[in-house]
Length: 105
Image (tube, rainbow, N blue to C red; front, side, top):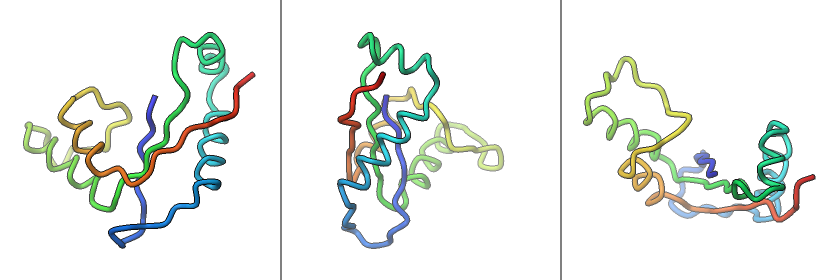
């Protein structure tokens, strides 16, 4: 499972503190529902991966969705992305990837 979050920095290259980002990922994963934790313990699903994308990524995703027929006035950022092309848009803009090294339960 991947979570995409965008950076608010305007610089092309930003310095993210890996320790802070790993702790953020850890806390996010620990806050998820008990069912998620059971699935993790049984290795049914992988650990949460947090990806930080550069500025403009959400707009690029919106442009793609609008080009495929989504009404601009009705557009909302998706909570789940299944489109390979939409995932490629986000993946191409990743500036950092972080995992939770701690085991759950």
